[in-house]
Image 1: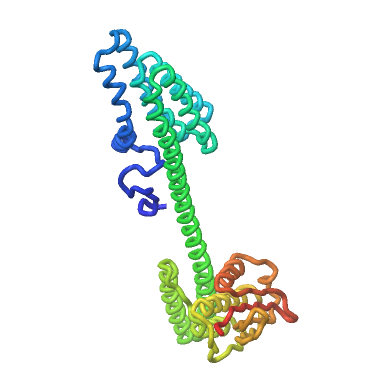
Image 2: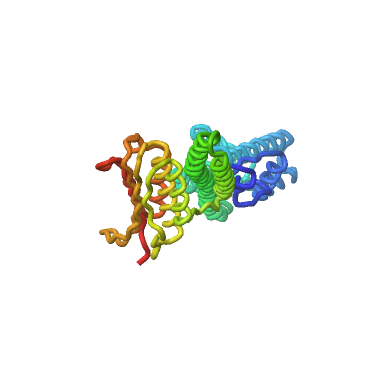
Length: 389
């Protein structure tokens, strides 16, 4: 997958996407600022420490406790959003966070009750959804119990905020997880599309080069046999080889760029040339009746004809080949049927190689089907595609 194909997440090619681990210091700083905005609830504890209401030892212990509390909170929220930690560790850190909030509130006063907002946010962000549904109300209940020993009025004012902010965080986490899943799904779709394109290119090159190289080989053998006594006929065969080579080059370029869509009339003409060069008596329809056949259906039949004729020339050792194009009414609706039958004894029908496998895939994409197997006097290939009523 190229750089252009790689998903960038919901924030675009610049910046860290939701639920994405920071890749450099700049992205880490941006994410810290986004999370740090919520540290505004710590203004009350900071103001309480700065006001000098406590002894020097109490103030120092308060600053230390607040620093440890903020560090544990940021570790839980930041790390668990990007690369989740193990659940036992998450649960342990949340317990530490809750104990710190309880101890700081009981020792330093009601101004520290706002720390339970962070405990609730950590529960909503780091715990599984079902556990968070229990942990968030439990955090509010613990704060109310602490409020009984400090300031019940302040606790009542904060309990709704604590519960709502915790549940809101569970929604944010679900959004992040959905975004991550969508990013992974988009990457999977891009990977499948690349695989499909590789399969298409492999099928096209197999069918194109197999047919063209077989014809070039036959023409070369004929030119070699004609050179001693018929140099003018050998020169004609060499000219045909040049023409086939140039057309093969054009076909390969079209296949690589995705614009290769063969026409059945052109393939019938090419089949006549290939079968004649191989010394096979050919019976082909002069003008194909393609009424009701779409471009995809015609292209699928053209590929089928090319593969069938290539097998006749290379494998069958046949003397005679009959190609028919018929309109049939079936239980699945009107169908256009192409049949190629030879009287050879070659081994093309016993083993479904890459050619027939790729041909089956082409016909299935066009809504058609393929039948290939031994006939009474040789091998028979039948390809059907649906017609538009």
